[in-house]
Length: 72
Image (cartoon, rainbow, N blue to C red; front, side, top):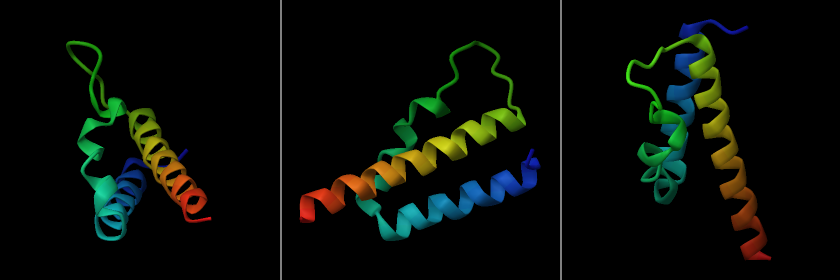
């Protein structure tokens, strides 16, 4: 499993890429449900970071794929 430092780096890099290359998508990142805790005292764990990174990747992949289809 990846270390927290590596996950944080990947999240930052991907977020920066989205901000720079897909600004229209960046505005929705703060609304990502994965970032909203569903309990009163959320526990931040490596798994939380893995889940968040996966959700960012998925969001970007879906966005890119849907816009490829629109261009064709």
